Image 1 (cartoon, rainbow, N blue to C red):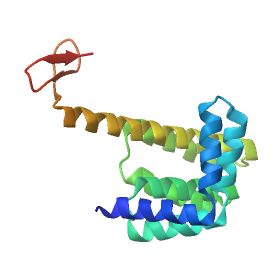
Image 2 (image 1 turned 90 degrees about the vertical axis):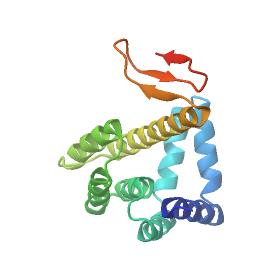
Image 3 (image 1 turned 180 degrees about the vertical axis):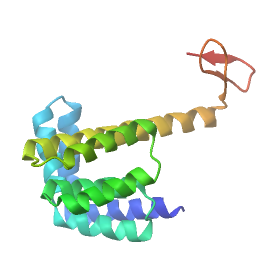
Image 4 (image 1 turned 135 degrees about the horizontal axis):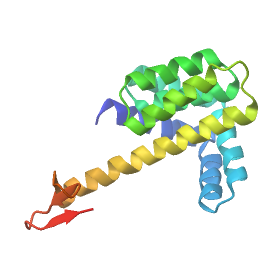
Length: 173
């Protein structure tokens, strides 16, 4: 098992033990149902927990190159109003070379964090924006992996990105 996966699994196991799982599921359910204010409030509660900072710090000690742990530790500090450590973890995340779209969001978040005063609403917006972007990047990686497992192979064409299937068929979009 890769160190990133081990750290993530330990984080999830500890979050179940410390009671983070129920608020997380409630927040995700609220998001899925379109109750955005409830979802943001739920995610804020999760990120502000000192237990989350302790667990994520341990995860980073085990897997310092985990983009997920760096992101959520930075967001936890941001929600607590500790901008120095939050910025440090966001810079570390940026240095790990995340997806280009995620990197652009992190850069914007860092510029906002350096402004004179961040309101609680601005902190919540930055956290939600980065968490959404991280979820998008995860879904892209999973989709790419699924394409590879299904036997799709990418090649360039003058018409745009195409994939060749194992049966020599071509899938373009």
